[in-house]
Length: 173
Image (cartoon, one colour):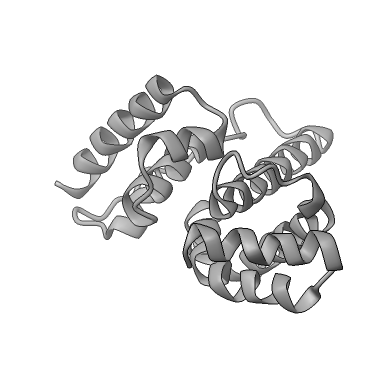
């Protein structure tokens, strides 16, 4: 979808509350958004569906605030990233409320198999590393857009990409 088509559909949503126009935006970006969230959630289809639905609901409710400084896709992915981050934070707080023993939070068991698939290797990455890898390598977005979506400076995005490549290289070799 071109930027002009995006802006026309967004304008129809804002001016005429055109749900069909928003539906076309959903159709255009549903698969890339789900793929992005699927990588973040480590393949949890149910959580991915929930987060995608929340993302589109929030985008629909906030479409009047879309300023077109970035593309609609970038804006939408930022909402999705925030939804994932909020979910992770709530889950972490729930775990803390359950008085988990020290050291039990945030640990990823090291896989014992000599060779891992890329998807399995991504489970060893932190949430931020997984997000930037997914956006940069899988969604093929430029660094500036990845930084915009995640809210991180470009240097931090580069650092996360570098660390993620090192971790994945170590696990896959």
